[in-house]
Image 1 (spheres, rainbow, N blue to C red):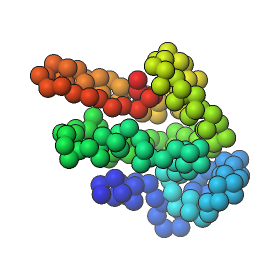
Image 2: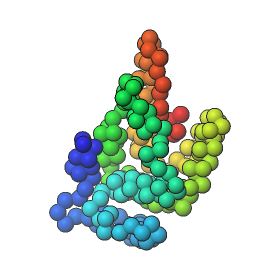
Image 3: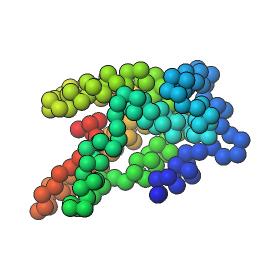
Image 4: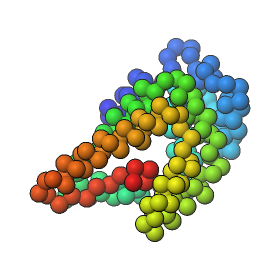
Length: 189
């Protein structure tokens, strides 16, 4: 797929270059501890650029917290695509390009932040799910802001700019004559 090619092209170090050449000693030590606890080989991270390593840490943490990507609401509707027309607000390639286009400093900060939040993942997910299920948008926003430790430039790209683009697309749907159902991540609500 295009997403896999994007990761291969922009998310992996070439030649002898490795993640260890780019991270601080502190981040390397934290990553080692994470790998030991998760039972994940540290060597598997070595060719990953910081943004891919950060996304991988998040994915492993979510899985360890009991989250299954196959059970996501977006996946539910994609599975129903045979009977419904599905349009993407944005492509997976676009999302990956946001990460890969970040400065190395922002990528390194994202990795550090991802590693620092590993132990809080399960508690955060449970609280977020409770706020979502109760329809408490104010609490959701407070939680997202509380958890918001992204580098400012990356937050602007990942949240703020995307919100504007998504809102424009949703506004177009609202002006149309078709009935639509829009699914977005909790941080965008």
